[in-house]
Length: 446
Image (cartoon, rainbow, N blue to C red; front, side, top):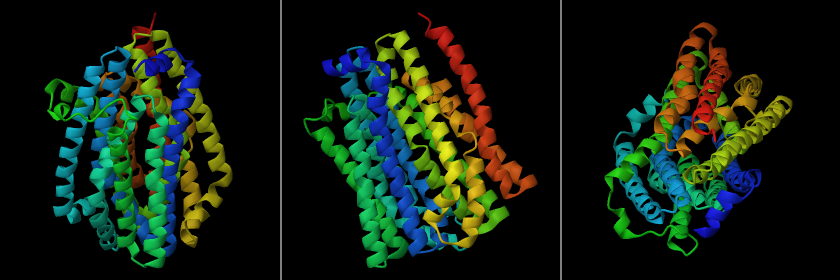
């Protein structure tokens, strides 16, 4: 643990952030490319409705896997601060409890998904001709979700150990597996949506098994010790309080998807859902550098908070925001210049090519300022302050975007859905700036 302490506690902040953020960005980028290629393959080889079906199903899978992600982020916050304070035993115990919680909860939700697949899909917007295609896909990938949940739990823990390159590899492996199997199962075996689902499920398993291999090998300082599987209520409460932020965020995103799919289907039909399916994939890919900065921020901030190095924490916040703002500006300019070319990658359908570029530009309109939201909520998670982290996390998707996406289309049609994104970004960014400035003045003044 000495090398980790020397690095996160003493190395130059900008260098640390780059060292942590670049592998995280590459990992997220490759996973995003995976989802984009998945969408391209099903769009080109199966049809437009297949894009809509994936758009409906993936938020359900990610809602379940977000349990693992929440446990991973909540636990990694504890682990980072414990390592910063020199409390290795607490770090080991937290890790063991993370494994137990992830496995138990993932299995429960998968069972619910198997027995109630049609009502769940209908709730998330699988209506009309989309439902049977979505059901075929969902019924296969649900069995890979426990592996995804375990991978999502393990990834932030690996970063908390100060080993971001391994976390990056864990995200790259399933992308390559999925792309190769998509080509084999869809194009050559002609297995359609069932083949697409099988490829995705196997890719989830490859990711989970690699994470398991990492923790079983001598590469990890956090060993899998059976005695630490026994639930420690105090540790679990802290994991749930901090990790619940991530779960609630994904829950809000899932509710948002229900509202979006309702509004899109009502005011624009299946085509509007397919338009958003493309925008959503572009969003995952384009925002990956900004998300990488926020992922890299967590272990650096958490360790220095635990070590009571307030100046380094303040510098970490400011540097991460500066990096993210520059990246967000570059992303927006790229979207502005190449929006039509981007859409043509996904589809040859003339209606989608005509409708999507404008919607894409509106959704990305205020991308340069979104880093403030991510770093604001990430700081409070790293500091172990669950309530402000939860509130800031819910600002965009829960408090602003859901009601806007429901009410604006009543007056402006599908256009109202697209404008709900930049409006909610502006409102949530303003509030985040106020909250974070107050926090820094109160608790990070030396």
